[in-house]
Image 1 (cartoon, rainbow, N blue to C red):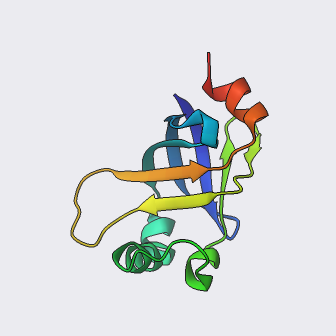
Image 2 (cartoon, rainbow, N blue to C red):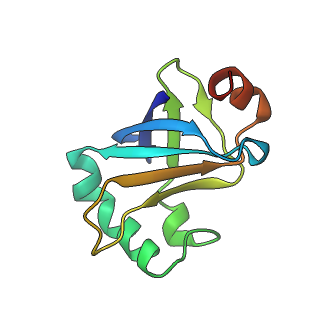
Image 3 (tube, rainbow, N blue to C red):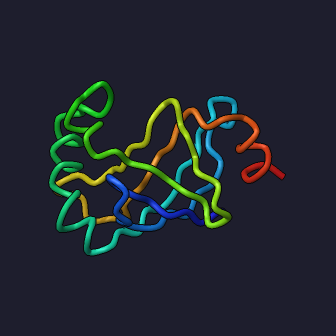
Length: 112
């Protein structure tokens, strides 16, 4: 498991405990631990997009400008995007998915 910081528009909104998913697709995922800033500034937009299943090619989702940086300082630059699963009626742990990470990053940090 790799710990990373999650940002929206450059503002720290939480941490993520990432594990490899479909490494051929450059996919990692894990628990998302939000900050109060997430709840006040980002959650409403995330929940709206989750409810409407409108993550990709959606100006509202893209305007969140989500970025992820490993504790080592390495920024993940996923070509497939970043999603946070936070449904309106769901009370379990939040999840983050990151797809399309370069294979060098996957090999260096997420495979043994």
